[in-house]
Length: 140
Image (cartoon, rainbow, N blue to C red; front, side):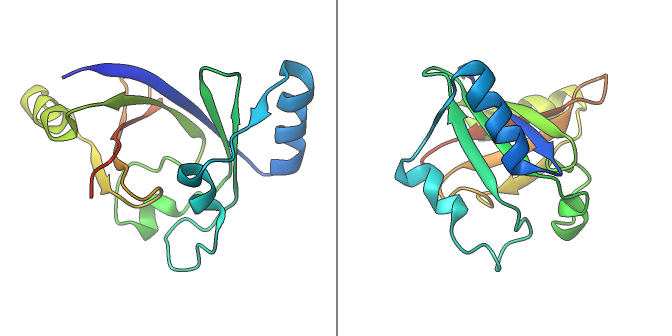
């Protein structure tokens, strides 16, 4: 099982302001590929309906998202990745990662493929309460 840092997500109550700040101050560009634009389409059938801006420095992705303190409740999960934000590791073995968590007694929320089609997402908290996403792409 391998891991690679994939993205950082920050939740905000003013998405245009936050996006403009990071684009202006840190020269971040917008990601406009199919995998990222699909989340921006009509989301009325999903638990998280907020807007997300996808930015990059050329290597790392930044996901700026509208805050939703109720996403965890709506998904019937105890970890809410949309309350304060999270950072993310991409893996090639999401099931193996969940077994690792189970063996260590670490609770997690298995969201499945809920936000971006084909990305199986698991969320957990570190010992200090920071939210972490681990996902595997191309899972259908």
